[in-house]
Image (tube, rainbow, N blue to C red; front, side, top):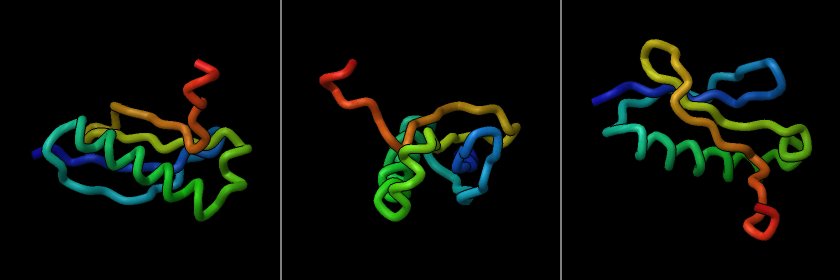
Length: 76
């Protein structure tokens, strides 16, 4: 199973939020969305800053990113 790292992206700064072994990128992306939701509830000020959660693989390649303040469906 692949190893994934999760970071809070705040501008050019990356703050480690942990690492975990998961089945695949689909499961990792679901975890990233969940983490982004939790962070936006705990620290709502991060939403207005344009922060996001990124997922990287073992080789530090970014494989997924989701914003803390997602675009509402009506604005897409």
